[in-house]
Image (cartoon, rainbow over all chains, first blue to last red; front, side, top):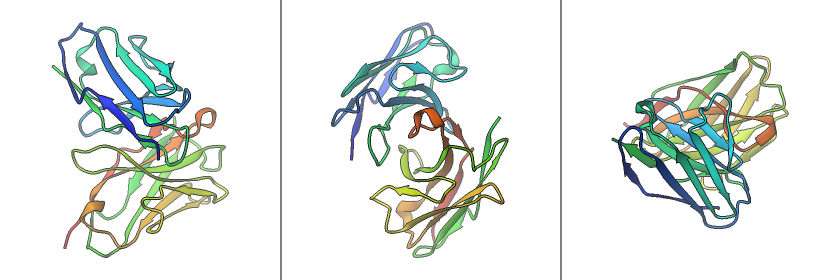
Length: 106
Length: 120
């Protein structure tokens, strides 16, 4: 099983600031890494797939980078609605696995 | 717009069987998509349970494989989940989700989730 480790666990920032979340895989996942956003009481929402591709309707302030074992989600300028929990997820091999989550808080 | 809706009992007794249904609307379950179940214990992270194709082909998480069955009913546009011998550790919000054709293994549409509590 591929283990995904996210850092930091919590990120305390203000609106307008830049957010950077990291995800490290226990073995190479090539570029098969996605990012999701989850708000309280809601299902996760797909933001980025295959490391750097924005999903339909996702604003340009969200970007992803990386390959192999090290990946980054960047939010260029935080909007109030961006304060949420972010998960990475790999589809390089079964079982599909998720990181433990990073909370972006004010 | 594809929509998914989970349904089923919110309370299951220990050692019993958890049974949930996911109804797909706005699209066909017989399309070229895989369909998954994902769960999230309260306040915790996400765990992939397994997936099914409309042909009936399945893949399961080895951590749950001995207790899980996922099936599909094409006539009702539904997929189902059964988890046997449940314990308190199976208490979670259960989601069904669609895997897009172009990047199987990711999840682009999700149900709103249903909380299942295992308790006597």
